[in-house]
Length: 93
Image (cartoon, rainbow, N blue to C red; front, side):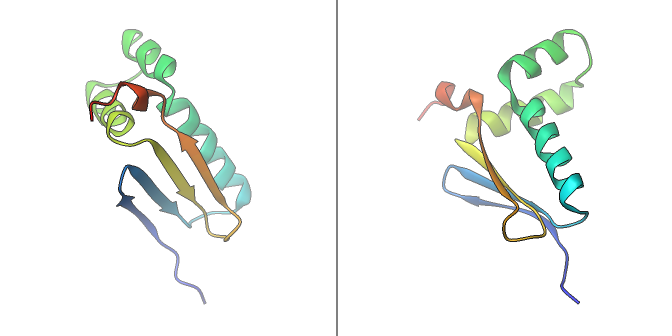
């Protein structure tokens, strides 16, 4: 039996998040949620319409400002998706 994990780690300006729970369908649904959650226009729109709490806004915008991209890792070795973060161009560095 293989150990399943959920975790996050940093590699310079790259954020890695592993979610090994679930199957391929659930992995790609998770990727789609991350794509929407980290899109700059989605963050702004959802904040204005109160769909996004202040805490979620703070977390998502901070992740987007601190990291160039996020790599999502699934349970299979071929389940790796790199998502560029839209706010990264606004990072101060």
